[in-house]
Length: 179
View 1 (cartoon, rainbow, N blue to C red):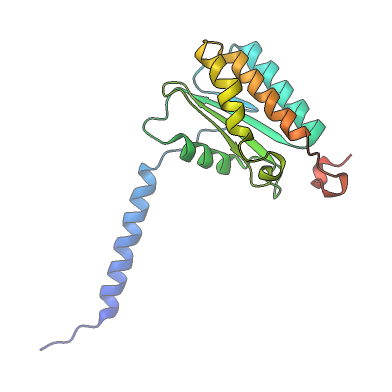
View 2: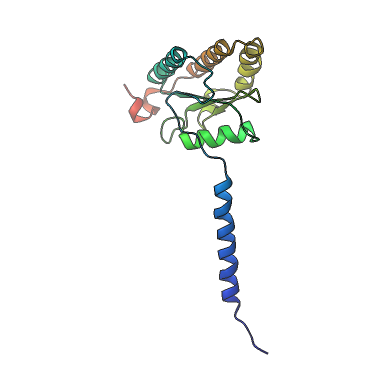
């Protein structure tokens, strides 16, 4: 009786696992490229609205060092809004490098889903439940009245107000934000 070494079988198993893993990434959802402060893949905003909102978000970053980005997509294509937002926020590296002080407002038009994704540091700036309150009491009611732009504007204003309540002390700001 011949004895076969388990080493080749081990390497064959590792190779098969590696090939399976590689094939899975091909089917994974792709990350949409950031188009600036507002990435409107659903063409929901007029050009002047996009410019106005972008200018407000840029000014907010200069004032507070916090970043807020918006992505509007036609559909999640079966993906969960939470997973989409987390994946996009991670890929876009929202917030200052190594600081995590950013927000991503994700809107999926077909599903009527909206999520406010916070960077890791923003959990300190925005208390638990604040993002849900902004969604439920400010944005959703206006969206239901077909006032999308007003709902987005008011929601972003509320996020900015909440972020201003706890300013970053000057000696703790990332270097690129110090006066």
